[in-house]
Image (tube, rainbow, N blue to C red):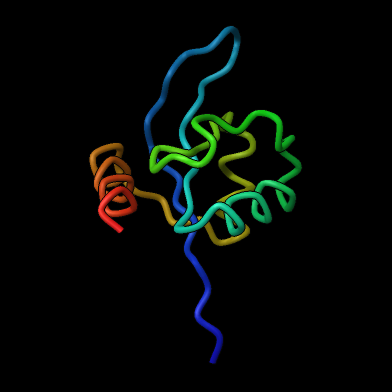
Amino acid sequence: MEVRDLVYIDNYEAPFQNMIMCHLIADSNQELLEFVDKINVNRKWIQHVGKYSEHFDICLSKKKLAIRFGAIEISPKELVGKMREKKEK
């Protein structure tokens, strides 16, 4: 059985212009980029490339799609914990 990296999306709600945004991370850069392709988010919007804090800011309409495609919803605190885990690897 193939073990896949997981993708996470937090339930943070940050206002940005006329949208509400949250954060999308993954266990690996490859999984993160493949996942944003699935939900039609442009790869150029990635933040902190190559760092443990690498992520995308995602609007709520894309969040629903991300969850439909298998992203695991977590709290902002859990998201920071996942980032710390990546930093320690």
